[in-house]
Amino acid sequence: MIQVCLNGPRGAGDGAAVPLSPEALADSAAEAVAAGATDIHVHAKTPCGQDSLSPRVLAPTLEAIRARVSVPVGVTTGAWAEPDPVARVQRVRNWTVLPDHASVNWHEEGAEAVAAALIERDIGVEAGIWSGTDGAARFAASPLGPRVLRVLAEVTDPSAETAEKSARALLADLGPAFDRPVLLHGADGGAWPVLRLAGRLGLATRIGLEDTLVLPDGERAVSNAQLVAEGLVQYGWAQRSS
Image (cartoon, rainbow, N blue to C red; front, top):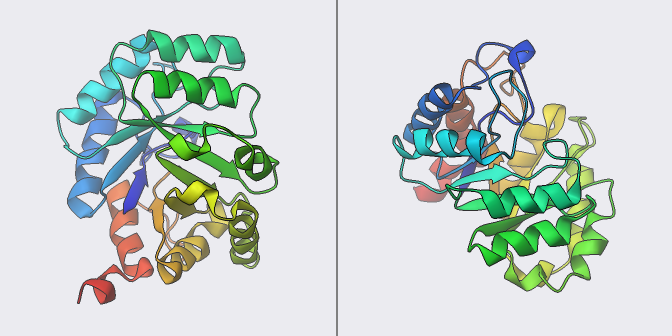
């Protein structure tokens, strides 16, 4: 599985390639799926470009994307989009159009309650375990662990030189992870080394303008589709399918 992360918390200052509006996100999603993405992760944005968990923002984004693609579509529940843990849970309970899955950052305050609210609504939970946090330890002790859809092993080390080492350490911290599927990905300078490691380990991965704005050679990416196409090459999908 290769997930495309369409935009993340990035905004207009990160370049015109980053999709923000529902229409732009739908176009980018369709192009990325045509390039080989099998799953979508998106941050719904207000008209001023801020991440939001509001049902009035989420619904048109999901509807626009689903009008163009048939693969699963997931969203964030990051605390930056709604800092109050109680309000974050209420947002989930008020969603009128439901995503297929949603990521929950396990190191954030209120993560268990958010995950429980998602499970109550039959929304798959992606347990986001960030390197450099106590997320792995918290997840290991969670009664919800066996019920998550998958674990996102999220390597926050931005260095191309050390990200692989950080990824291996994170995977060791995760241990068996309740036997849930693991999606391994990196960020910024670590995005491509971690994606290649995921390929060698046979783990699911993701790529997109949330994780990196550049191709492996440092050239600026023009689209999520371009990143997905290159991601398939770097992962080694062609060799695996031959």
